[in-house]
Image (cartoon, rainbow, N blue to C red; front, side, top):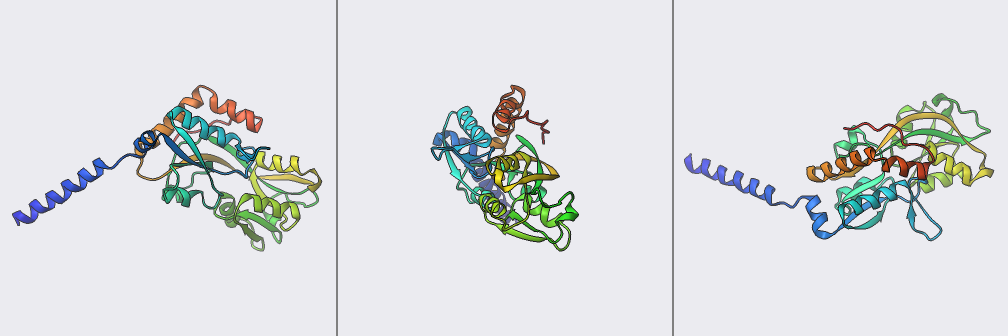
Length: 261
């Protein structure tokens, strides 16, 4: 019995030592002198490609500032809305900065920072279509990007009879809307405004607000030091005005009030 007890103590001590010895992700980034951040490039003004095919936008500036404040090199990893979380969980990136809305389901899989972004999601459709409420989506073809909050909201809230069509990335969803393959979709209002501005002949317009959303930075679970650093980063740049100034630069309006988790 005594031998069994001692054996249990030794196993527990080894487990504790192994946990203590495991490198923290923040330490890994600092030692590597590089941070790998997943971003999208298909949701202007938050992320898009410029004339030189380089990523630009609010999220891109956030990723660059994070790397600068860490004092490390930045490597951007381009992802889609559907594979943001799988890319993070598989260890291919250190964090995700890609309009990732916090939900209980996502929080069970990854760590989510305090919000660094806020926006309202609007249904967008051609002006000729009378779409004023969710009930008006009945019998329409509504496109969503698979695995996004847009997908979740439309799937749960659209009336019976709505034909929901799923696409693998936001670019494909937007193209389906512009080509008439679908009748409506939904994104943040500033994203819709960019689509409308760049495609005036499509006669698209914002129809009604679907919901208000926040964006968090995604981390792998079990990384408290990195999470504390990110939340401190968000707090500091909320206070010094950098986040609001950057939001205004890209979105054209002040950053809405952000809560803290």
